[in-house]
Every structure is written in structure tokens, then in C-alpha cells.
Image (cartoon, rainbow, N blue to C red; front, side, top):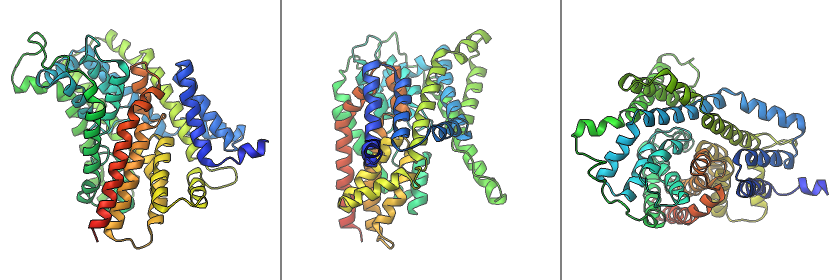
Length: 441
């Protein structure tokens, strides 16, 4: 009996553990224990022993990558709280609402934060989106889905995202080719996000009232954007500076992907403190907020789940490779494998780098040794579109987790609400991929 359970196809094991997380969260409304339960079930189901489970969890917990990730998530929350405490966030929201309908502002604010490659960035935009609806005319699940969706509409082509850079590295595409691949998918995400999410939001306040908005000139209008601009500029400067140094000092190790954004957030916090200082007591409440530590532990649980996805199986090999072999053995057509593998990997890892790094080497090997540019672009676009939506829908995606936590709605409800636009984006990616494969040599 136990042997039969352990021999269950990998696809069933992954989907079963994700289903358990969703069901437990829906029934208990407690996200952290639900994530821990799903991670343990996946580990045991894939044959990991007690010692191996402890080793994998501890190595992931105390890795430099994970420590910097958790620190970055904390910094996101600290800067967000600092902007709220100084009134910067209120002024930013009022300025946006003064120029857009409340419906437009609810898309524009998370999309603006979406240009920042920060983990858990949806948590930064969530309070802004909440401020667009002070009278709570829009239900919390719809606000949460809108926040999460529009936070990720640039994920397919914006070169500040590690997933885009990794795709370019694996495929050999340059930035113009990546734009050709990603911008149409991004436009599809915006279109179907508008049609299937934004249109459900009534234009409660088409323009902010005179009391909440005053045209104070361009300088004061853009002033609330300065913390965000500082993060972007600092991030770009650190990346460019390190790249320049690496040319002359090739022995330098690769830079950790969370360091530039964490440094940028720190610079923004100091800059905002210099402009609008807060007291020591206020900073104590911001830094030691129980909400910050609760969110950090939730992110840790998500990353431990990811560690079990990435860990080597007791019998050798990796989960994703075994899943690919199973799909091939089942006689599934090549195009379907190129759709399913990135989608399931995105669903299981909840990270763009995760699904690209795990599935794209396999996808590229399936395309063939010497594909034409049209074949390469076509199949990569299909794989990217399906993986992108798997990553957006993933119950272990940090942004979806923290958005659900902020708006106090079950992850499953948000996933189901996002499924219609996600299906349309995947169909668009499939259609675009087939079109490029037919048009290009």
C-alpha cells in the first residue's frame, strides 16, 4: 500500500500537495500551517526521510538567498509603513486618483509598483489600492485579485526581472527579441485583466473630490513618487556598477539577485527619513510590528515548499525531470508537453526564475538541436506564456500569498477568480506562438 502511494506519478504528487494547501487554507483560514502541511506532505510523498526533510528545510532556511529574500520582504513592509506614517502614500494615491477614475487607479498603482523587481511587491501596492476605495464599495477578493494581477503585467519583458534575464541567457535572445516575445503577452494580460477584473469595479469616484486632490504643480505631484524612483535608480546603478567592475575583475562572484533591490529599498528608507523624519518610537512600532514577522514566516514556509520541489529525489534525479519523462511516456504531443511542463512548474514553484530555470532547459531540448528562429521564438513564447500564468496562479507565489493575507481572503478564492483571465492569456500565447512559427522562417 505504502509503495503504491510512493509510486504515484509526480504530477499527482505536486498537484495533490498544492490542493492540500488550498483546502487547508480555505477551511482553517490559517495560511502558515497550511503551507507547512503541504510542504511536509510533498516531502514525505516523494520519499524523503526525517533526516533529509530536516536537512533540506534547514539548508533553505539559512541560505544567504533566503535570508536576503526575507529581509527584502521585511524592507518592503517597512518602507510601505514609513510611506503611510509620513503621509507620502496618501499623497501618491490622491494624486493618482485625481487624474484617473478609481477603477483606473486600482490598476495603475500595482502596475507602477510592478516595474520594481521586489519579492512580495504586491504587499507594497495593496495599501495603496485599499486607499482608492475608502468607503469599501469593492469587495476585498476583487481588490486582492486586481492588485496581484496588475502587479505582474510587465513580467514578460521588463529586463529588470531576473526571469527575463534568465530566459535571455538560456535562449540566446537579445532585448529586442525578448520584447517581440513578451510585449504581446503583456498586452494580453492588460486587456483581459481589464475585461474580466477591472470592469467589475464600479467607477465609484471618477475623479477625486476637491478636498482630496488639489493641482499643486508637477514638482509636488511627483514628490510622493521619489521613494519608488530612488529604489529603481539605486537598483539599476548597483547592477550596472557591479557589471562594470566584473569586466575588470572577472574573479568577482556573481551578485545575489536580492541584494540590489534590498539595497535600493534601504536607500529609499534613508532618503524618505531625511525628507520626512519619523520619531524613534514610531520606527520601533514599524520595525517590530507582529505583522512583519508573521509575513516573514509565511515567506519562509513558501520557500521551504520550493526547496522540496527542487531537491534531488532519494532514488536520484529531480521531480521536474521525472515529470517530463512521465508526460512523454503517456504519449502527450510535443506542443502539449511544452505547455504543461512550464505551467505545472510555475504552479509548483511560484517563482519566475523557478519555472524558467527548471523547465526551459527541458523545453529547449525538446525543440531540437538546430531550430530555426521562428521555431525557437514560437515554442519559447508558448512555454513562457503558460509558465507565466502558472506562476501568477501559484498558491505558493509570494505575491498571491501576501495579497490574500492582506485582504484576508482565501488563496483558493483568489486563484479561481484569476483563472478566466489566465486562461485567455494562455490561449493568446498559444495563438501568438503558432502565428510566429507560421510567419517567421
